[in-house]
Length: 217
Ligand SMILES: Nc1nc2c(ncn2[C@@H]2O[C@H](COP(=O)(O)OP(=O)(O)OP(=O)(O)O)[C@@H](O)[C@H]2O)c(=O)[nH]1
Ligand SMILES: [Mg+2]
Image 1 (cartoon, rainbow, N blue to C red):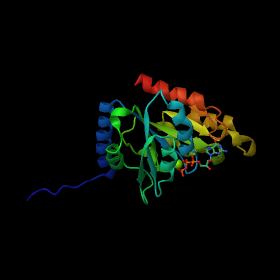
Image 2: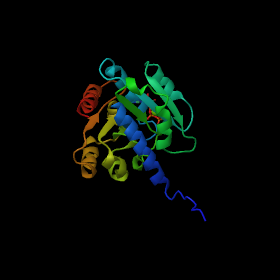
Image 3: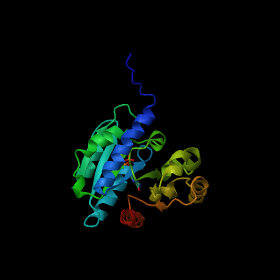
Image 4: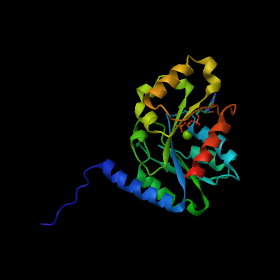
């Protein structure tokens, strides 16, 4: 009797497709960052601050992922940047096969940086490989200073942490020292950028790091 193929592990299947995404991006010479953070942390705002600063320096495109709507993609489109929207429905993260599909709609030969904004969630996207070059953790001060220890997976795996909304620190009980100590306990060496997408504070340093990364790859 012919063997019945059984897909044993959804994560395994995802990993195989993530490998295809990675291969395709590497062949095209593209570095891809997966932006992960809670709903409202400022992932889209960070891209809105970043993309104009990359103009003439680093050709970029964006994949936006949300449960519903194309609102974030519309915000990105306003900057004249190529963008594809993925709607995950009830899915709490973007899976690799949807990233693979999205690549078909992007001008890969013309870009060097691909930014993927994941579904707002601190947990599920952190454990999933989608073929990215690195994960960027986006956290805002209004979420509290205790998140690195409470949600260590993302902070351990990411290649940079963007701490957003620092303009709001005086209005919260956020203690920066405690946040940094907690972060260092889970990831001693990860670069940390304190920024405000409202005032622009700290954004240039983040952008220079980003450009530096693509130069190194
Ligand atoms: N005060 C202040 N507000 C900010 C800052 N960055 C973003 N916001 C506000 O925070 C809200 C959420 O920002 P978004 O960029 O949409 O957040 P997001 O992480 O993309 O949200 P989702 O895609 O829904 O997960 C918006 O009202 C922004 O204007 C900041 O640095 N300071
Ligand atoms: Mg967003």
